[in-house]
Amino acid sequence: MTVPEAPFVAIDDLSFRYPQASQPALARIDIALAEGTFALVAGGSGSGKSTLLRSLNGLVPHFSGGTFGGAVRVGGMDTREHPPRAMSAMTGFVFQDPEAQLLTDRVDDEIAFSLEQHGVPPVVMRKRVEEMLDVLGIAGLRERSPATLSGGERQRVAVAVALALHPRLLALDEPTSQLDPWGAEDVLAALSRLNEDLGLTIVMAEHRLERTLGHTDTVIHLGADGHSESGPTRRMVSRLPQSALPPVTRLGLALGWSGPPLTIKEGRQAAGGLVLPTRPDGDDARSGTPGDVRIELDHVTVALGGRDVIRDVSLRLREGEIVALMGRNGSGKSTLLRTMLGLERPRKGRVLIDGVDRTGQDPANLNGALGYIPQRPDAMFFHDRLVDEVRYSMRLRGIASQPEAWLERFGLRDLAMRHPRDLSGGERERAALATIMAGQPRALLLDEPTRGMDARHKQELMQILDGLREAGVTVVLATHDVEMVASHATRVVLLGDREVIADGPPREVLSDSLTFTTQVNKLYGGSWLTVDEVLAAVQRR
Image (tube, rainbow, N blue to C red; front, side, top):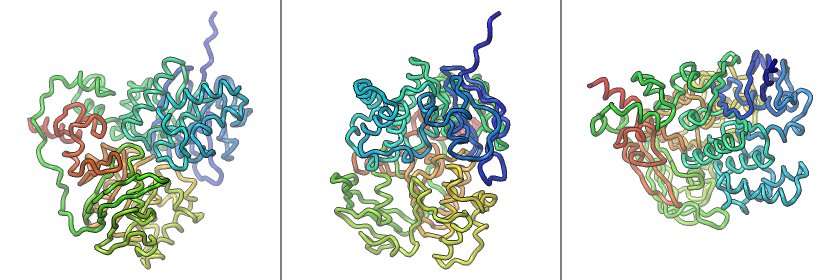
């Protein structure tokens, strides 16, 4: 009689509650994964995805504390009996915030650091460092300090660090959240090769399913109640919220295609008989007309670390616009936002706010005219309770209102007494936005605002930003989220090689591109961008 092989990852009746939390983060989770599985963990913000991943290497409960029930075993190692250091050679881990795991002053030293801690021989160490630099496409960053890298570049370095130990399981928390489309595809392609060629088991949490769903064979869905359901990817598609599905999958479901398609290749095969007009009806004009110039960059050049990262950029950003700054990692999007705010001083050129030259001035002198949320919203929080963060922002601006009303508006009222740093990535982003908007700035600068945010909360965020635009607020956001930009931005500024290479409506800038475009445009070409446009055309027929 053949004895069934034990699963490589065995999660049995797992429950976990963080210290002082009123509700469990995970409740009665049962998951079994064979070695070599490529699993996607899906679910809303705050559903426990990060907690589940942290349980795979013992960070939960050894580091986090809290109440832990059940058992988690990886390769036969029980995480209750083996602390994170002992688990690290078995389970590599990439955090949602890569800054949290980067310690040295050079990228190649960063990759070598964990190998040194595990006593890997020098010759093997050097070989693995070279391998990781090549696999992740970061050889050009070898001598750079992680502190000087963009968020997306740091994310790729963090993946390289985790892979260098050759773990049997790799757990990744939002690994593509800060990556441009090419960078994300490079990382996912590398992970797929490692999964297929070496049998590496991968468990990855991700909100942008259009990037990841086609690479996985298993989906673990965490519900809002902390419970889970898992199974083969194609079977689980019908159990996921439709708003979270890739556009090509949503289109296939809406039009009754068999499958439904998970990738552009499958979508093209299924959509062969659907003929669309030359272009969709309507245009990119959102309701309302842009007003006066709120922010002006006049031939601005910015240098960091002795090299120009922005060169001779001129822009006029007006009241009532949602302007999306796009471009590959390292193209200068974040630097451009920081220059508008005054956190970076131009080497040449001027920055004008409401017609007044503010070049090089202290941001405090802007008197709340601009609100800014960085890539890491944690940097904004310094109170122990979320409600106090909002109250403080209102007091600084002399605004008399109830902070709970702003938390309600952003779906955070139940978290008012929580410490901001205890929130999930998506919740922290919304908390930062509530804190800034409570001060009622005339312009809002956002750096990757939908990072770590689920589809429902992303839609709620964009409805809020649409309302701010209609009220005359200037919204400027740096983002890689092409699908969101296509549906909500009034204007796209595309950066490349330190300069503006395209500036115009989404339909003009995003069409006919191999990278910075939507799944629908890849499917039908021309000026088609969104699922709603295609469905409207089908209904008219």
